Length: 557
Image (tube, rainbow, N blue to C red):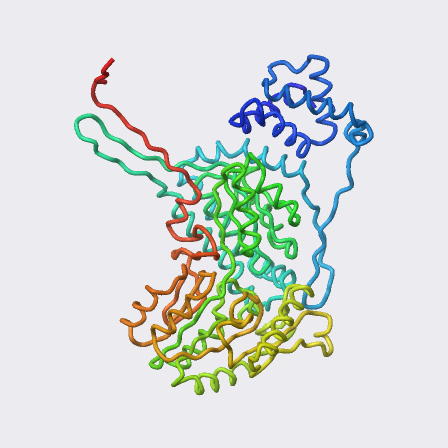
């Protein structure tokens, strides 16, 4: 590689770490070069510095490269790959259909070099994209939405095979939700404005909404395409570049997005997909060239991402887990309440973060509620996700199936009673997949593990209550706060109860419907920030304040 280009890259890295000062910055720069540059690049910059050919190299970068040279000389065996410039074999990530074990394909895993190259491409392309008017960016995003809509059937099949979810779901939700997201943020892109502040005769002020730069998105395996779109559309709408990593269990549908973007006219480098697992994610969350990370995942993963992001003070949006309550009062329309409970527990085989798995039913109507609930659960069809009549598909993996089944067994041991379901299906074709029957527990206590901990499977816990205050107190007795729902015909009660529930995304007389116009996100351990809605502009931009003087400066000096 050209020495001047290597010098520019090293100087850019020095700029990232310069704030650490002369004592710490060289070590950070050396560590970054060692992690993210390939062996041949490291060898060339070391040789250029040794031969004094690295003109205009930042002093901090010069110290860092000399450190690398000293390490290479002190440990030639450990550095032999760097000296020879040997290329490591490309690791691959395989995808299998969880419903039948079918091998679907494989994708290359991005390592340190690939992540660094992706960041450099994004940083090079992003300023020109941000410089476009909102109307110009909106025009491109609408084309993305149009292409996704045209390819809905094809992409829905990929999503179905990758996740094990029924085609009746993926065809009407997964891709369609992405279409609606791009349409919505295309509209918002044209209105990303600041405000004018009158400051009297002395002057005035105004604010500007400006892009953050390069954003990393880390998606979830339950809604791969939806999470990709929910993060990418706002990022691009407000002038950022996006590097998106799908979940390692579901790499295929998001892998189609770069082609969609290119066909729509998104410039090269503005949207990229990188594949991999935890290590690839860490390379993104720790990279100094990335300004923000948006994650959909577990609480544990969210804490790890936030810790990594703190090293370079990245912005973060975290949409995490939940153990949400659904409160059903005596005056509720019972069939509607049953519908809400079913949507909030068994859609996508229960693999939904906002699910209302703690269903609190007033004692006076509990018996009738259960009668109607069990009748409808028993009629649900479990089967081949490709069959349009299938309502419940496969869980995502064998590991996750064992987790769900272990919770079901734990619930029994703790004294809860299974009213229906609670079994893994293994007969015939079911034996090749990870199918669990929709499960309803009764006789639950608030201190049970199945009531307190997120299961992320088709498992509903039904609890009874006697009065409103009791229900609210018990509903809030959790570390989570993603969602909550209330069923009642008394609107005064509905608004009163919702106001007291400690959850970020709530429903009255419905459940799990997520229009783009309404922000989505949680309280407490369920996350930080919001996705969708106008508020998202605040999470993908930074605010600049400008004071404009109209008169002379009255200086006291």
